Image 1: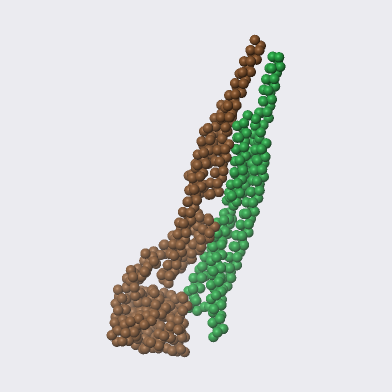
Image 2: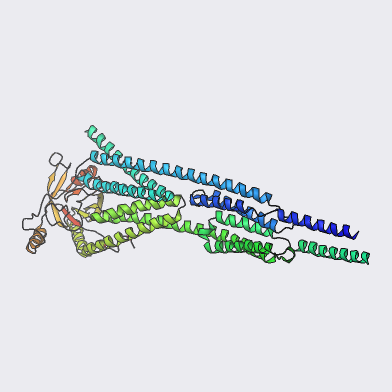
Length: 202
Length: 369
């Protein structure tokens, strides 16, 4: 009887030991998730897809809370946390891809805008040549030519900025140059059209 | 004996189990508090707190990290000796700071937006005022380039504002503001220096108006700064016309080719109708008058003008104006329709007084002040 009792206690102890020590913290998965998040951050996710990156970080935090929550228990089970971490690693990969896609989108938009501005600058220079000469036009044309030169300088600065990888600020600069160049183009086109109409009318 | 031993062991086991169960029930892990703190940190980040409510956000993050670290440390201890109370407190502090961060971030963003909007409008007005009041000043090439760059930077600032890139907006506004303030000061000083002649001009204008009143005649007053030409009859303004001048209009005319419009007391000595002038119609003035000749000779004497300089002539009030720029060689240009009216009412001998400004620096409703 005594032996059976002590055998039962020993069996209980062994079972407890087995159950509590079978579950290990999924460190491999934690490291993989952290590495994936870091890769997404290095790709610029916090800048270019900020909301998605915040959601990604939150998912990681959820996983870590699950782990600590399990560590708090007598009988630990990390399968849920492990699944969460695998999901985080996958999500980080997606966020990285989204970042890269967004950056490509921006780069294309910037390059298109730069090309548009360069084209407008050329067109404006041609329009300046066609604009009515004469004393009254001279000083106005000097001012316009100055503005066209400034836009050209600005677009060269934009190209340099593009190389630094600061795409959001670069796009703003490019769009500003485009707005100015377009306005000059419209002004010159109107002046030339009026001048031609006057000449025809004489 | 055996039965007593078993009984005591069982009682001990039940006691230990009871204590263990009680401990587990009363010492709950801080899942709930930590999850709330976690969600709040996330919301704080979405509300841009790291940038706009940095202090509160950092506190929230610190409390959260401390809570997680302490939780991890407690979990290393023997289960019955763990104490999660402090972790719950840290998590609550984190959530509270996140809440403050969110509120402060929203408030600060609104403040930043308001400030930037005001700055954008102020700088836009400054640029406009400069163009309106000082844009007709002969501006040196270096300053013209700076002003052009300033306007471009202003446009960039507006773009950045539209895209909520407030830091970039602020930087561009700083650059634009520095330039426009600098050129304002320079040309405001030039204006002030130019308007020192105002007392003399005021006397000339008064003299001309009195003459018109006394002799019941027409008279013309030209205000160069305002680009206005006033036709007087019997000492009262009959009509007003917008004019264009030479590109170097500021100051008196010193020599032929300087593109300056002279200042002084003149009269109409010839009227040129359509066909007699290439500028539609013209009123020829008696420039240079005696004062002009005296000044010209003095300038040559003291070396201000070259020995072979010529004083110039053929200063007229003529048509073909309305171009919106100063384009003449020193003449005063009007739109043809205005020239028709002025021509009709200006017989030969009509007094023409040309001054820098009919208003003093104080009278000019100066937006620079």
